[in-house]
Image 1: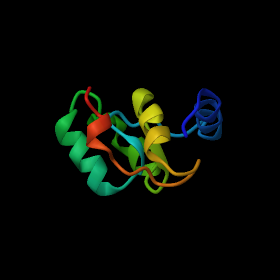
Image 2: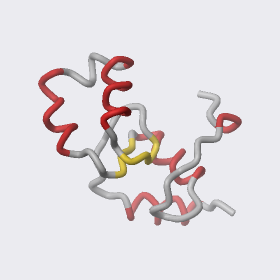
Image 3: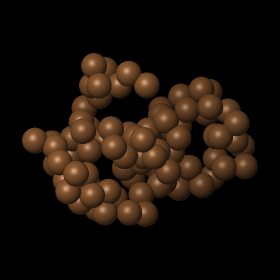
Image 4: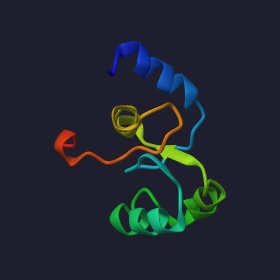
Length: 89
């Protein structure tokens, strides 16, 4: 069962995680970077590419993605499993 204290613990465990717009706790890969660069070009600019490439292999989130990651993960550092029925907007 998911709780408010569980969400707080999850968020605390991920303090300092890289912020990647459009992510919810996946491990950063070249594929995700390419997809997000095409989908969100105003955020994934050429000037930011080196910083993003240095974060490959790390678990990444955006603001609402942190909450989605908590809802879709079995434990603090488990990879989240996307759940479209909970992702309504």
